[in-house]
Image (cartoon, rainbow, N blue to C red; front, side, top):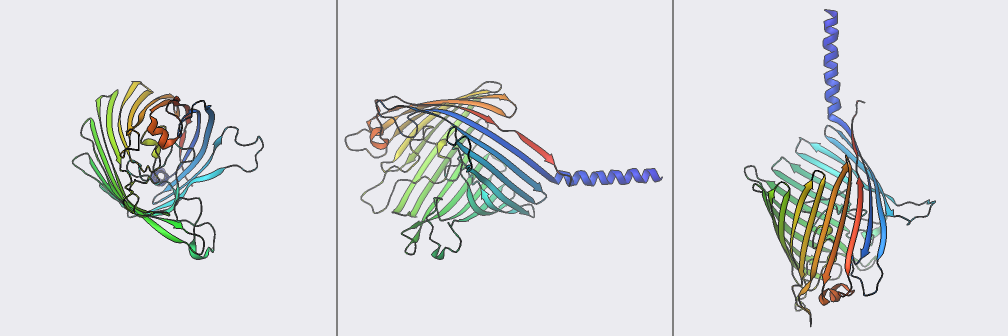
Length: 413
């Protein structure tokens, strides 16, 4: 009888410890990403006779994610730079905190998250991680929300300052805004594969000088809709801007739509259209859409020619194909036909044709190797917009190794 009681008590104790351990965990996530690039016209077109550039960039990131019941704490440290950018013996590195936040959950559906964090919403056109870039995007912010499966509501508040006791709160620091206020709602239908999002963003930017400055606010409102019936997906978004930047009054909008289909598991086709209007100089406001803090590399071509506002507007008719060549090997090909909205004097609306090719191979668990090649067949209109010469060959190639192991450890004490 005594041994039976001991066995029962031991079993109960083991059950309690196991349940407690399951509620408490530590995720260690490491990343080493090295990317070599051949730059012969990426971001800015080449001039005739101009030499290309070759370089290797690297990101080393280490993340810790602690979870216990209704508490989550994440810290992520990274070092970024180019090979050869630092001396052999470096006393001042560029290590930064890419994430450092705590999240408290209440009644399973309410939460509050405070600290340095990524803000990623919908297709990441307005707010995104911008993971392609070396550093990525982060925000020092407070985020509170409600999530119950079909309904998600987030409210975000960020306030930046350069020093303590800064009388008047004048901000001229490195962040692209002084204040950020956002409200996002997403509804995921239960009976049909339909998702609808609404977002409102209010950004405060300082103008003037310390002691004589004022904060101008730019508002962006929009919706993002996705529908995924069977092997199809249909996606559309619309955004409207109003208010003021540091230099001008703004009233603008943009729209995009795309669709795709899986013909069979190894082949997918897609097509879409993006429209950003031109500025009307007869009005007292700026009418060309202003990109904000999204993952801009995902849109308008991989060569990143059009990540800022264009007074002549922009249209992008694009299509692509993805193929799972074999297990662990995937290829993507995309085509962009780019045009202005407003015709420039003595020039055609046609900006050019961009072709983007990407191949991704899974070498082993947690290790991928990807390569890409892009070229832009531009026109004289592109020369006027971005400089360089359309008579010079414009291309860009890259090779990237991404090592991203993850270890999940249950904590017992």
